[in-house]
Image (tube, rainbow, N blue to C red):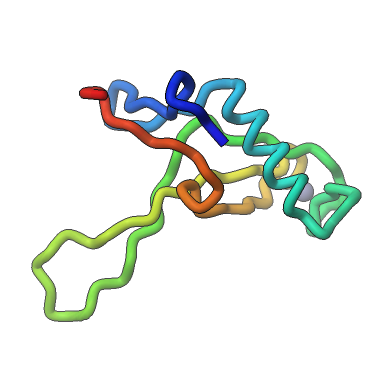
Length: 103
Ligand SMILES: [Zn+2]
Protein backbone atom coordinates (compact mmCIF):
# COMPACT_ATOMS: atom_id res chain seq x y z
CA UNK A 1 0.00 0.00 0.00
CA UNK A 2 2.59 2.57 1.09
CA UNK A 3 5.93 2.93 -0.62
CA UNK A 4 9.15 3.77 1.14
CA UNK A 5 8.76 7.48 0.38
CA UNK A 6 5.43 7.58 2.17
CA UNK A 7 5.79 5.20 5.10
CA UNK A 8 3.94 5.81 8.33
CA UNK A 9 6.38 7.66 10.54
CA UNK A 10 6.75 7.89 14.29
CA UNK A 11 5.56 11.26 15.58
CA UNK A 12 6.19 13.09 18.85
CA UNK A 13 4.72 11.13 21.71
CA UNK A 14 5.63 7.82 20.09
CA UNK A 15 2.65 7.73 17.73
CA UNK A 16 2.59 6.56 14.15
CA UNK A 17 0.87 9.18 11.99
CA UNK A 18 -0.49 8.35 8.55
CA UNK A 19 -0.33 10.89 5.76
CA UNK A 20 -3.50 12.07 4.03
CA UNK A 21 -2.45 9.96 1.03
CA UNK A 22 -2.09 6.87 3.21
CA UNK A 23 -5.49 7.49 4.79
CA UNK A 24 -7.01 7.66 1.31
CA UNK A 25 -5.12 4.48 0.29
CA UNK A 26 -6.54 2.71 3.35
CA UNK A 27 -10.09 3.69 2.43
CA UNK A 28 -9.51 2.50 -1.14
CA UNK A 29 -7.95 -0.79 0.06
CA UNK A 30 -10.94 -1.49 2.32
CA UNK A 31 -13.42 -0.59 -0.43
CA UNK A 32 -11.59 -2.95 -2.80
CA UNK A 33 -11.76 -5.83 -0.29
CA UNK A 34 -15.29 -5.20 0.92
CA UNK A 35 -18.23 -7.39 -0.04
CA UNK A 36 -20.42 -4.45 0.97
CA UNK A 37 -20.41 -2.71 -2.39
CA UNK A 38 -22.47 0.21 -1.12
CA UNK A 39 -19.86 1.02 1.53
CA UNK A 40 -22.62 1.86 3.96
CA UNK A 41 -22.04 1.60 7.71
CA UNK A 42 -23.67 -1.58 9.12
CA UNK A 43 -24.96 0.38 12.14
CA UNK A 44 -26.37 3.66 10.80
CA UNK A 45 -26.42 3.11 7.03
CA UNK A 46 -24.42 6.24 6.23
CA UNK A 47 -21.35 6.15 3.99
CA UNK A 48 -19.10 8.51 5.91
CA UNK A 49 -15.91 6.61 6.70
CA UNK A 50 -12.86 8.41 8.05
CA UNK A 51 -9.43 6.75 8.32
CA UNK A 52 -7.87 7.72 11.63
CA UNK A 53 -4.44 9.29 11.22
CA UNK A 54 -2.92 7.30 14.08
CA UNK A 55 -1.95 3.64 13.86
CA UNK A 56 -3.21 1.74 16.90
CA UNK A 57 -2.19 -1.61 18.35
CA UNK A 58 -3.93 -4.72 19.51
CA UNK A 59 -2.07 -6.54 22.28
CA UNK A 60 -1.70 -10.30 22.20
CA UNK A 61 -2.93 -12.00 25.37
CA UNK A 62 0.14 -13.47 27.08
CA UNK A 63 0.10 -16.94 28.62
CA UNK A 64 0.30 -16.37 32.39
CA UNK A 65 2.50 -16.14 34.28
CA UNK A 66 4.50 -13.86 32.05
CA UNK A 67 6.71 -10.90 32.84
CA UNK A 68 7.49 -10.31 29.16
CA UNK A 69 5.91 -7.36 27.37
CA UNK A 70 2.89 -8.33 25.33
CA UNK A 71 3.36 -8.67 21.59
CA UNK A 72 1.16 -6.33 19.58
CA UNK A 73 -0.37 -6.16 16.13
CA UNK A 74 -0.38 -2.72 14.45
CA UNK A 75 -3.87 -1.86 13.27
CA UNK A 76 -5.47 0.91 11.29
CA UNK A 77 -9.04 1.89 11.88
CA UNK A 78 -11.89 3.38 9.94
CA UNK A 79 -14.50 5.30 11.89
CA UNK A 80 -18.02 6.12 10.77
CA UNK A 81 -18.23 9.90 11.09
CA UNK A 82 -21.96 9.65 11.78
CA UNK A 83 -22.29 7.00 14.52
CA UNK A 84 -18.66 6.31 15.57
CA UNK A 85 -18.76 2.64 14.59
CA UNK A 86 -15.17 1.35 14.21
CA UNK A 87 -13.66 -1.14 11.77
CA UNK A 88 -10.11 -2.25 12.42
CA UNK A 89 -7.63 -4.01 10.12
CA UNK A 90 -4.20 -5.63 10.44
CA UNK A 91 -1.92 -2.90 9.09
CA UNK A 92 0.98 -5.06 7.93
CA UNK A 93 -1.24 -7.62 6.22
CA UNK A 94 -2.88 -4.74 4.37
CA UNK A 95 0.54 -3.60 3.16
CA UNK A 96 0.95 -0.56 5.36
CA UNK A 97 4.65 0.13 5.84
CA UNK A 98 5.76 1.18 9.32
CA UNK A 99 9.28 2.45 9.79
CA UNK A 100 11.19 3.90 12.70
CA UNK A 101 12.87 7.28 12.71
CA UNK A 102 16.34 5.79 12.08
CA UNK A 103 15.42 4.67 8.55
ZN1 LIG B 1 -22.37 4.62 11.19
